[in-house]
Image (cartoon, rainbow, N blue to C red; front, top):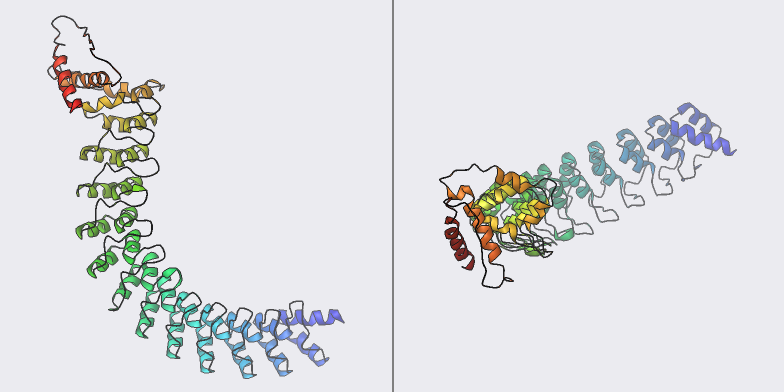
Length: 487
């Protein structure tokens, strides 16, 4: 007998109308259930077998039978989008407000899946338009978040509340804004959705749109005269900082036009300018600086805007920032790197060049006592070392020891192939140019050695040269270098 019942359920699931009809004529129990408590009617509806559903309903199968998860035939048909089955079930008195284990009604499932015709039919049958699931989410919120424009319009026309919040205080407008569904945002605003509701993580519709990089949606929201543009999310970020991070130039310009604060800091202490720099959009950086953003603002870990531009490798942004005379000697990060040290560590040749041209100091060291030459030679970055030594006076830093007692010169000497030899070996001799001959380089290095604090005077220096070679001019150079060092 058990096999007969099992076969009956299988026939219903497979849509075998003749077999189902024979079983009915033989008087089988229509409420026979499988291990999930599904009846033949539930199985037929779930598998979209309209003819089987008709036969079972004519035989008076229980139209409101529930399975182990409280699913009915109508819930299955509504989720699947089978309009004909939905209609015939309701005509046989299926409950349109029955909920499954997650508190979803047929209207909610149809709205969630985007079955417009079924939504319209259920609304005409007076389905509760503001019913909510176990999380407090309504049909309108589901449709808004999933971009079902026609369904959103139907629900709003049927009287759905545009400001109904879920358990996290998130409204349909926030759902739509988070996904960048501008057409739905426009519909909701037309029906007077509140633009400043604060949802989960202190998120408003505008914060959600800018954080997601949805520029068109953000611009539509900004057309609302009551919108709060200075609100901050749980991390202390504003719509402006999100827009800068996403590179939404038009939105940044519009927010600034609405008088958004350009120097607001988040909970980490990072100002808006940092997000524009990290985003890499020079136009966003320009808008902020032209509206008095602080170029030298210091954020978390003592980092600055120029520091972040170097870290992210934003050459164009670095060049633009340098036009505003930033302080490039502020050390930040866990290693206390200045922008020049950081650029050297990251092997960003073009940025090193721009910083040296700007006047960044080679004397700056990180927490290990390394200057840029230590780092460049250790990393075998010949191009960077060449840039760092392009000014002959910088050669003195070759003899500066770090905290381990290493000098850049010593690091280079331990390399299998010397970098310094290739750099200085490429210089073309010009007997009429003392600097090119190496006097400036030699005197700088010698002055640095003789200025070592551990040395005691008097100090005797001997110059060995052929008579008449003119090497005595080196003494004049050496004297000048001593003056530079002591100053």
